[in-house]
Image (cartoon, rainbow, N blue to C red; front, side):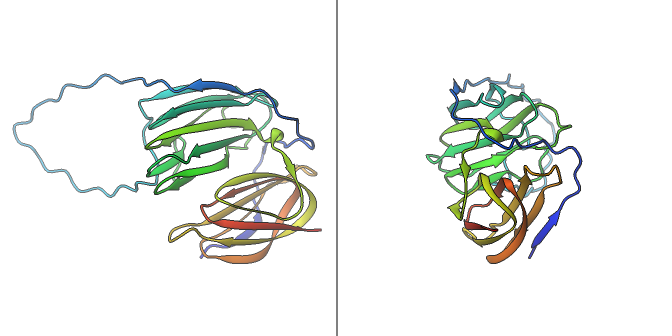
Length: 252
């Protein structure tokens, strides 16, 4: 079991604006496949058996998919959206001092489905079949503004990219299922969080970023069902990563 409620000393976290902006037009693109040239196999006089490797089908791609798409710039009031099918690598440019929220709709996929990025040890989100959810990308100021996500998908999908400053503002108890990024207006330093996993191997991870102070985020999580009071930084953004169901109630 892993349960944690602590501030992380991470310098240079991008600032979250105190007020969000209204809906903005979305630029859309349709994925186009770029095929890499096939290599001519070289015959071997003595074939050697290769060792059996264990591959996690939910870990996501470990190399960039052949199908590639550029979503363009993403900034405050400037979202982007791409659509396609199958495995894809999508690049985008973070324009400004903001963190990007990526929302995946792969509800028509048959799985396994996984959303990841270059160099990650684990996927942002994954499922044996369909997958939907919102995921917070790297909020560290020093990170490269040129970013990319890799999607493993058997079926059609939509990916939306937007600034966390453009998320709708909510208040009071919040509940849902799957990964989400919430823009919470309540003022609170603690919240009661309940979580039920979707199945074996599921886990919960929460990251709370405040707008009142420029302090580090509060992190908490578990690998077993729980109901617990945790430290949060509200008002601000709360990023939840899970396939299970959850409820978050700010405590004034």
